[in-house]
Amino acid sequence: MTGLIILLCVILITIVLVQIGKVMELTGQIKGEMEVMRDNSKWNGWLSLVFMVVFLGGVILSAWAYRNELMGFGPHQGASAHGDSLDSLFSWTLFFTGIVFVITHIMLFWYAYKFRWKEGRKAQFISHDNRLEVIWTVIPAVVMTFLVIRGLDAWNTVMADVKPDEDYIEIEATGQQFNWIVRYPGPDGKLGTRNYKLTTANNQLGMDFNDPKTWDDVTPGQELYLPVGKKVRVRIIAKDVLHSFFLPHFRVKMDAVPGLPTYFVFTPVKTTTEYRNELRKYDEYNTPADPADPTGPKRWEKFEYELACAELCGKGHYSMKRVFRVVSQEEYDEWYKKQESFYLTQIREKDEDPNKGKVLDIEVGMRAKAFSESIKTAVESTNITDKTLTLQHVYFETGSAALTADSRYELDNLVTAMTAYPSLVIEVAGHTDNSGDPAANLTLSAQRAASVVKYLTDRGVGAGRLKPRGYGDTKPVAENDTDENRAKNRRTEFTILSSI
Image (cartoon, rainbow, N blue to C red; front, side, top):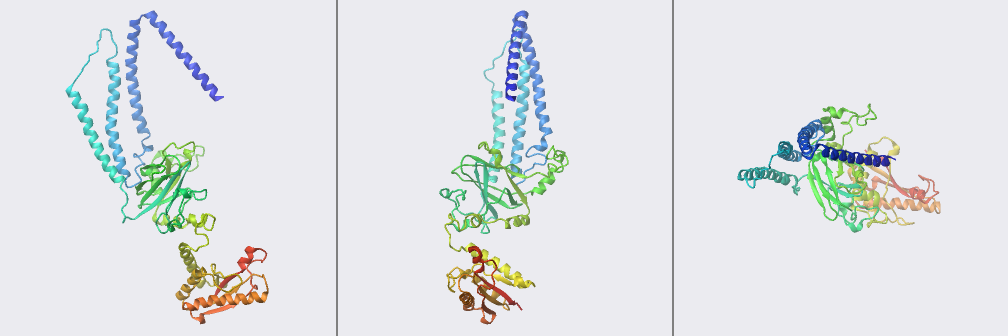
């Protein structure tokens, strides 16, 4: 219905314009051709002057009215180390082009008025003027030289890559329709390799999990964090069409081109909170963020640094917005600790895992850290139930007391703990499920506890500090009604008897 009304309005306006043209044609026939030309010329001249004043005044007034909304002015100074140099370059460019804009604007419409048609006036044709040639050649050349030199200086500063010995964070941003997938390196500080041939629904980045550097890489959620004052190098990649990595407040913009990796280096110098406090000083940002909720948060309170795509990459282009929060190093470290490895949480031990069935170095390290924290808590605790810990990764051959090869990693952690706490005395307990003969289960559990003790004593732990004992199926931690529960009951534990 709305479309039909708009169409009818367009048709009506067209009819009105046609009728006005016919009226003017009849008026010209009545008044005479010369009189009509004289009137038209006069009105065109005066209307040109009016348009000049209105248009030029509108440009200046609107720029002044919205000065605090524009990048580079008011509260929107660059939030990165290189931002000021770009803002300065744009300001100088605006200064010179603004002068040319105003002068040519005035001259264009003033001449349209001054040299409007009059009876008896003849045009003058000037074929050549050396002075004018020099003026409009030399002045633009000097200005362009100034702008080009400043531009090259800014370019060399802004586009410089990091040096090998610099302290920086490298992240990766992959553009796709319609999302940014951002990858951070894990604790090793290095991003793992990629291979587009490995791209699947579960591995959208095509990470090569044969490369140990990919094992700890993380892909955070919608909110991304960066530490203030820390140099950031962004690898920029596209999967499908042309995108553009755009952080307007940091003066960062670089195309993401399929098949052609690019990069950008910048250093955030204002935290999100600091930027909000700058906005807070201006009336424009003390209005409600949502006009429908006058009592809700103000605009400055809702401000966020935005990652956008600056290319029209499709109908869902708008949905590529991501939020970057710039925080202190302490806040960043706290957020970073909560991020989990994509590989370990999404791929590990699944069909796509090329390391399925293997114990990885990263897991050995994580287990050692977790074990150290657990035994420290157990030693310091006064609660008797906290004194018993399960050896989560100790396994035996089926129906046997022979330790599997991978059990050594967990048992080595226990050796380390016994060395760190030389007064520690523990009971090593073996447990089974209720499958089979209870007496046989009791014997098997005792033999398994003895195997663990032997492993420890062979590595220097005193036998007097270790008390092996088998409990068979007498102390289940779950009902023996499912395979999963029976697996929980087949366990090896140790209990701290003394730590003094």
